[in-house]
Length: 71
Image (cartoon, rainbow, N blue to C red; front, side, top):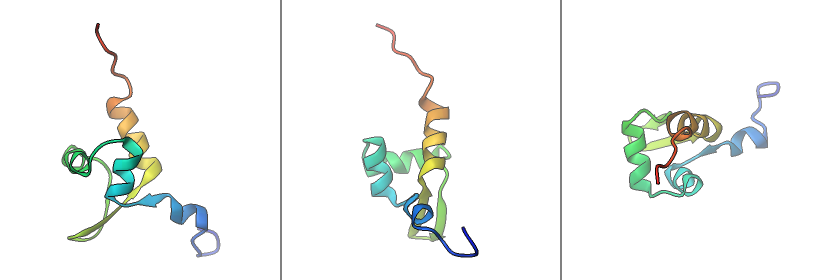
């Protein structure tokens, strides 16, 4: 916020479940599963939530970013 006003950049960093699903290339149901595992969310009401996209990316990387495949 600059002088009490939201900047366009700050507003664009928030998304809904579909935005997060698209970003992570998963289904909306998978986002629900990640929420149950502790993904950060801003609950605006019982049926409305928003996600701080950089915070979600940090959470996802910290939880899944260090896995390696075994062939």
